[in-house]
Length: 325
Image (cartoon, rainbow, N blue to C red; front, top):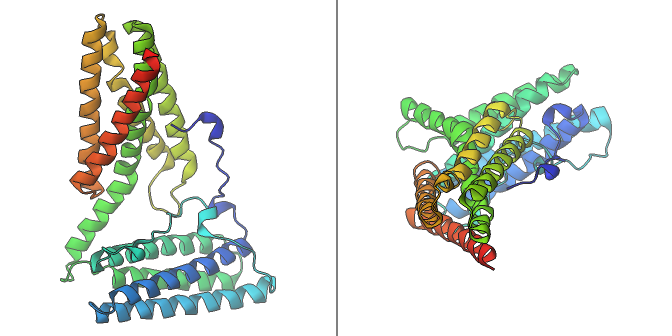
């Protein structure tokens, strides 16, 4: 659970950047993307030479974009380009390093490339809106169109070029980003982070109603904290994750629900009955989390189960040990 006192996000929104900073950010992003495409090409060349050549071509295009941006920057702002990177700005997803994985496959590379180009397109569209210079606005608009073309080129995940399949995949991605990810993050935090205080209170006091009050306060506090964190962390302009208000509400509600699940049994007056029911609810919650991770995040069953069950069991044990001390 992220504390309310730590909610100040030092990242800046893309809407707060100056034109010079926007162009500097675009330069570094194009350089990173070119390197990633070359890494994909290198890893895939032996098995998929034609697709590797496509990634090589995309890397060369990104090099051309970077050169055009540098020329524009020097013409407008001089030779000193400030250090701006995507990780300094809200809304940009973290750069994945799946090209280093021994399990890299063509579909993974294509899907990552599509995500990169969608993010770049959204960034250039927003940056163009904020430019008052005609030449800058034109270049940024042209780059947005180029990145949109790359989305189509990189997005042939299926061997058939079935537009319906691609549209369905895009709709699923949007649903996961806007609803599943925020809800899952909240459910995990609410279910796991509240285990220790609730069971510590239960075994320390032996009083079911006091334990319920601790669980209620922990759940509501965690819900408010996580909801605000989600709202502040990403304005959705670049990431395409939808309204930050909606995501904040979803995250906050699921966090609260996750905590209340094993707090409500302590309304039962008998201590051991309430505790046994609460522990059963905990494992049901962890099972739901595992199912969602497998179904929507495509995490293998075994990996998801081990991550969730081991983590949950450890936190539960900590709460019981502290409460029994």
